[in-house]
Image (cartoon, rainbow, N blue to C red; front, side):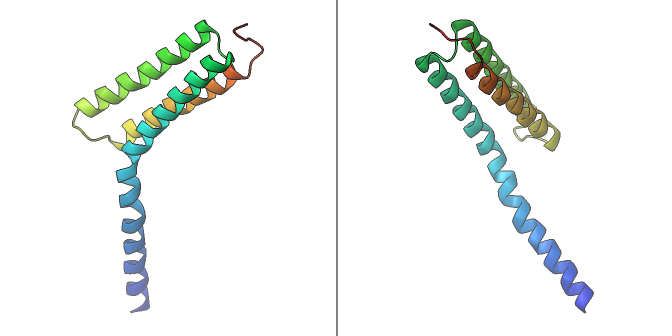
Length: 108
């Protein structure tokens, strides 16, 4: 009886833990894209980004949106692999924004 109870408890815990994450995955991708766009705009306003840097960062963001649109078109829902690829691309983009904003180049 104890093993059975433990198994059901674990199963219920996994269901409770996984479903909200699955629903938030799309929201987190969109939110990350908005945050990164805001970081780029802030870098342009403050002069931390040159025009060329901003253009490159914006085009990287556009590629992420294209990948997202393509993944969405193939069925409406992301597979785990598609979500992973998009998140990875957003991670790279975020690192690039940080690096460009903190390098020695300014818009002066």
